Image (cartoon, rainbow, N blue to C red; front, side, top):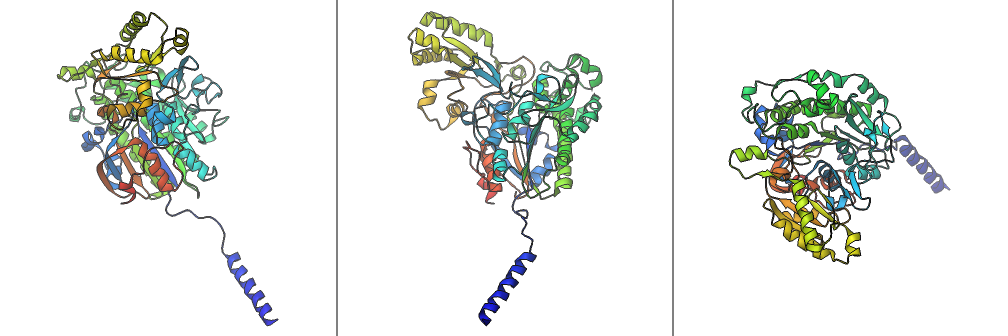
Length: 547
C-alpha cells in the first residue's frame, strides 16, 4: 500500500514538472528565419571586380568581405537566357529537366510560340491589362521555395519580386504565397495574378498609391563625375541604342517618358532597381517575413541591369553607373534585413541569370573576331536546301531559338526518315561560316556528353520541348541589332556569373574551384535540412558548408 502511494505521489510530481514547462516549438538555432535570393539580371562576374573601387562598403563589398565568394561560378547549359537562368538557380537543375528552355519557345504540340509564364487560365490582379495573366505552370520541377513550403506544412512563406514577370514567378515556384512584378506603361505599379490571390494586399495597394514610380521620373545623371568612370568606354559612341531623343548623360526621364513607354522607361534606368529594392523592403514588413518559427523565402530580381545592358552595351558608362547605384540599393536592402529580421537571422545569396557579350561592332573595331547572324537569310537558305534535297517544302515546321523543328506529319506522309533529314540539315548548316557546332536530336538522345559545348547543349535540350537540330554560333556572333549587348551562348562571357553567400551559417572565405549555378538550390536545401527540389542535379557546395 505504501509503495502504491509513493508511486502515485511520484507520478503526480513528474506530471506537475512537465506541465509547468511550455510545450511550444522554438526556432531551430541552426536555421535562418529568412532566406533571401538575389538575382542581378545580366551581371557578368567581372562587374564585381571591374567596378570594385567604385563600390561603397555596405553593398557588394560587405557581401564579399563577410560572406563566401565563388569566383569561378558558371552556367552549365545553353541557352543562357533570363527564364532558364532564374529557373535553374531555384530548381537546382537545367532546362533538360525543368522544362523552361527559353523566355519563349515553339510549342510543337500546340503549333505556336509560347511565353514561359503566360497562362490564359488566370486573370490579372491590380491592373485591367493582360500583363497579369501569368503563372509558373510551364515549369515541371519544384523549387527550393516549394520544398520549404512542403517541409513546413505550408507555414513558411515564399514571396517573389521582380520587374519582369518571369523573374518574379519562376523563382517562387508553384506554391509561392505571392509573386509581384512591375507593370509600366501608363500605370507604373506592382501587379500579380489570380494564380496567387484575388486582390492585392493592403500593403501593395498602399505602395502603388504612394506614387513612388512617379518620383523616379527625374534626371538620371552619373552618380559621380563621369570623368572618373575609367572602367567603361566613352559616353558618346556608335555602339549604343539609347533612348528616343537622347543617347548620352544626363537623361531627363520626365521629358523622355512620353516617347519611351511612359513608366516602362524606368526599367531601362537604375531607378527600376531602386523601386524593386523599395518594394522588397516594403514586403519584409507587409508580409511579416522572418518573424516566426518557420523559415520564409524572399526572391528578389534586379532586372534593370539587363535592360540597360541590352540598350547601351556591357562596356557603357550607363552600365557602370547602374552598378554603382545598385550597390547603394543593396546596402539599403541589407540594412532593412538587419533591422527587420535581425543581423545573423537570415541567409542570403547573390548571383546572376546570365552574363553578356561585348557589342560585336565594338569588338570588330578593336580587331577581335565578332559579327552578326541574319536569321531570315539563314532560314530562307535552309528551306531552299531542304526543297532541293528532299523535294518537299513542308519538312521544316519552325526555326526558333537556334533550333530547327521538323514537321513529323509531312515526314510520315512522304515516308522520309527523320534521322536522314537531321543529318542532311546538320551537314548543310555546319558549312555556314558563322556556325560553330551542330547537333541532331539523334545525337543528343543517344549520347551522354560530359564536357564542352556538347554537354552544355545537351543539358539545355529538353527531349519533349526542344527541336530536332540545334546549332551554335561562333564566339561573339549574335542575332541582334548592331547596337547594345545580348546573351544566350555557352561561352564564358555568358556563363561566368557571380555567386556570393552571406549571413547565417555562412563562413567568410572564397574559392576559385568551379561551381555551377545548379549547385545553389541543393546548398540552400542542405543548410535548411530540407529535400532537394524534385529534379535537382546539382551538388551542395561543400567547400563552404564544411568549412
